[in-house]
Amino acid sequence: MNPTVIDHIGIAVKNIEGALKFWETTLGIKCTGIEEVAEQKVKTAFLPVKDTEIELLEPTADDSPVAKFIEKKGEGIHHLAIRVDNLEEALAELKAQGVRLIDEKPRKGAGGAMIAFIHPAATGGILLELSER
Image (cartoon, rainbow, N blue to C red; front, side, top):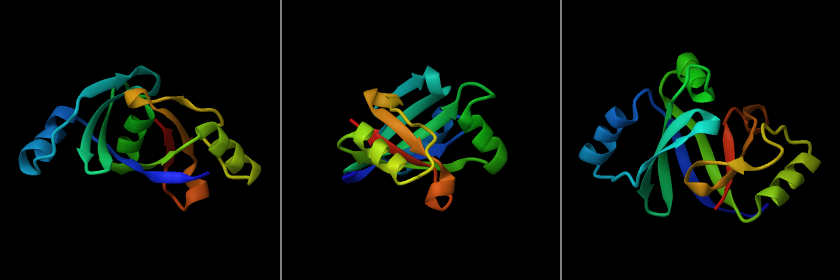
């Protein structure tokens, strides 16, 4: 699978603009831009921290997975993303090992990355995203 780096940590928030005030003003971590990912019903903001990023996720619809997460667990860490060299190959390898996947095929994520999620049941309760940039 060859994971190369922690790509980002996704944090579910009710309001990106409000959350950015803390990250930018208090911590001095500047947002590189806000983007809407219509397929996933979220608005995202990325904040670079050395070789990784923090991704703030705001739901844009009540039925989005992030909205459901916030309703059930409140705001907080939503997922961990690991970058891989070849996402299709990584998914095939995991599927062959019987790992429970949410996405069996890559899909487009924020920032032009191709992504796929591994089910928390397979990872000890962590929603794990694989990302290929």
